Amino acid sequence: MAVLVASDLDRTLIYSSAALALTMPDARAPRLLCVEVHEARPLSFMTETAAGLLTDLGDAAVFTPTTTRTRKQYLRINLPGPAPKYAICANGGHILVDGVTDQDWHAGVLARLAEQCAPLDEVRAHLEATADPLWVRKHRVAEDLFAYLVVERELLPEEWVKELAAWAENRGWTVSLQGRKIYAVPKPLTKSAAVREVARRTGAELALGAGDSLLDADLLLAVDRGWRPGHGELADTEWTAPGITALPERGVLAGERILREFLKAVRGPR
Picture (cartoon, rainbow, N blue to C red):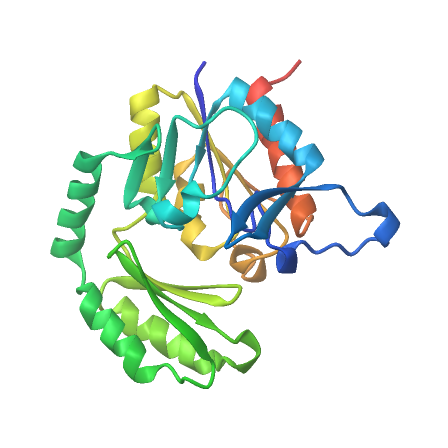
């Protein structure tokens, strides 16, 4: 039976140094493997144990990284195990097949966005006009599909985020706060739609998923079984749904636990 495993990456399977949550005594901390280097600096990690589990998973299932990252940001990650045949980038805006964009899929996404929600330029202008330079470090646009801000989290007014979310809702967009980034994403731009397409192409009879942010909720609703770690927006809001398991682990050890759960589900009862 073909099994599709569609997993978010950042703060789900891979972790920046700030997100590792190494709360144990130093001598008991897990050995870490660097899986991403950016501008000659190590950026993302997983435990060595998790790396072995991911290698096993890649041999046993159709492992499909499913990320909000742009294609460029995704392609600098060096995951252990077999190279994934499929990857989903830009929150579903791109399906990569052997590392190359499927242009037909992307064209269909652009058509849906043009028809169903306010244009990106309107959202960018609103962010420029209302975000305070006191706490905004960067304004960014990803793949000409969505926008995000890099902020100083401790200075960010909670009310501003709520006001932005209400403004965006009326224009067919959604807002998500993940670490130091605030994302504004068109509602039709979803990981779930791309996951369903990969499931169709691979003939998967079982789909598994994992994620930590509100942008992952639709992904988790689209799979047969899903897991969320003990950190992130979904944990903070106590989000759950049928078939979803809320794990207690936080930080890089949550990534290890998620991979164990994937493998157990793929291999089935013994």
